Length: 538
Image 1 (cartoon, helix red, strand yellow):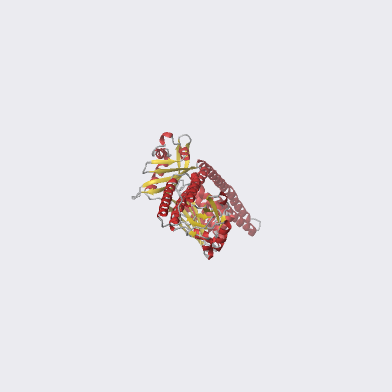
Image 2: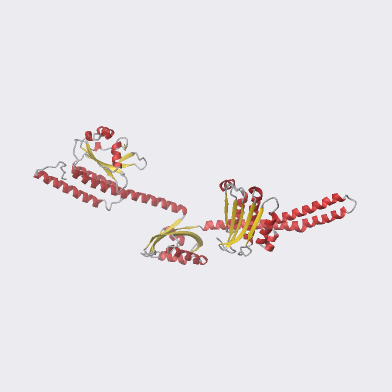
């Protein structure tokens, strides 16, 4: 191999040798540029080491080291690729920034360092000069390894160990090209490693989460789907080409959900929605009816907004839906049994106990006209009357018959009138009688929420006034109970597990409704409960 003479000569033979060496180096750069284009990540290290060897032999350099900053210890620089004419001179230990503080700072700033002798280093590089002498470095050229505007990820150092030497500008420019080649190769490998690691994490995470992925290229008319997607949908082998998998998915949508799903899907593709999240039933060819949780997003559109590429993730949530249905059904049956028991007790109190108490009152009244002291018997009669009234009130609390006989509006009105006692708090009502049909369970739910909310106002709020409103909202019915009392901290109430609030939430969930509680110390409280119309499951 022809060696380049780094000393410029004016003689004709010297100039010829210099030109030949320059041509040889340029050919090496071209070779290296093409050599790394199609190299696999696992082949890069060997190619870099061989490239360092060729450069050192061509330029008569004793030692070349490619240093890279550690990803786990930012102040440590690792010698990842080394070539040394004398094998015993190759560094094997990491270098710390404290050994070469000035040089490391120059590299991180993207500056090149070239010195023909250690003595020529600037005063601020005193520590670096001492380290050079310790390691036997007489002259050196250090080039930062970076791509674009990013900070340097390492440095390419060429060292003269046998004798001092100069670093002409032409040689520096040539070696800078080598450093750029290495920088792009290493950056590409790092990006590839990050991608592979990310892919592994994504694959592991999706497997644990049971996620199935697909990507649709409408421009090419193709679908990429992972194995989990094909299993989840039961796609047969003959339907995997072109858009066959998406067409198969559409065909197998449950008849009761197809119109809803296919009605939402165009919103994603026409730009009305950037992404969608939906649950629906799917008819698997062999597993039968399955519940699917589906998220989708458009990643590319043309100038007119037409979808060019979209991707999505799907998950089988059949088991979760089954458990939710069983728990909802169990809770609904428990509450119904509770209400039936209350109704039975109310009937017994009303039809038996109160009738007997009324008879006793009559008998006591007759006795008061006899020989017994009239005043004493009068007190008995009054006490029995009071007891009868209290028992009747208890029967109402257990199950207000007015709710089934006259409806929710009248029941709420009677409840508010019963509670609006002089000296306590005033209750205003705005009850819309023309509300949608919401079903018996939902009516009982709203009535119990109103009862619990008014109980809280009476016991805890220290309010002067409260209001109860009932309005049609979003096709369903909204009940709101508001007071001007002391309010409370919602976070603290949640941490204490307030039983009344928990009971409200549980009741509302059982009828597929929604509950919102707004309160703050000194700001009063507003409790809003919404239930859907009868027959609608949210």
